[in-house]
Length: 184
Image (cartoon, rainbow, N blue to C red; front, side, top):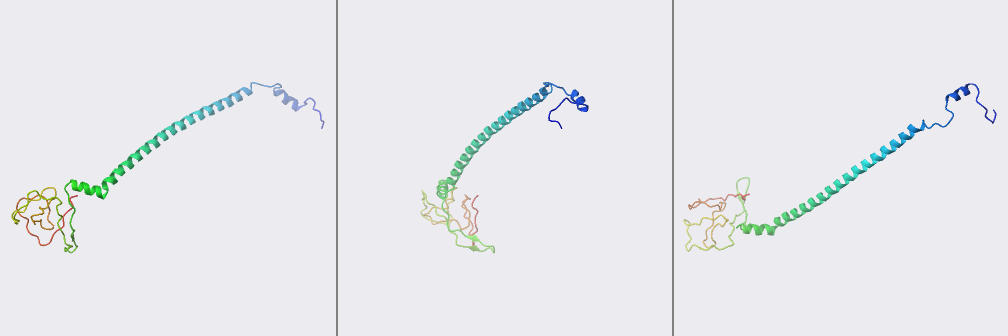
């Protein structure tokens, strides 16, 4: 083989004539246009994606702030509930409503026996007009505050009977006290 190249001969010469001999700008133009369009489309897509992410970020921040706000409100409400559910607050509210601490409870067993010795809750406030002579027929009708009888009368409702207002007739005497509901 020779080191220097000479003119093309034979078949190679014919193929060489089919190919353009000079630099062609017409073949490069569509390629450059395609690359520019791809780069421009990629940049626009990137811009739209970035805008959507920023918008989502703002929305996420708003939701986090709202969640923090609602959590603070929930905690404040829970503190209020806990303060109102504290034993001293419940006792104070019950006294405001006219309730008194209950006596010893009695329980009704599955066989019908009464377990324990029930006692009547005493009223903490004295009655304005105590009766001078206690009698069974003049038993005072309890008021709606749950005051069973004035402390000085020696009268108390029969164990297990309700302290709700009744007619002036006396309640029949029961041999075994029956449990009452708590009123809830």
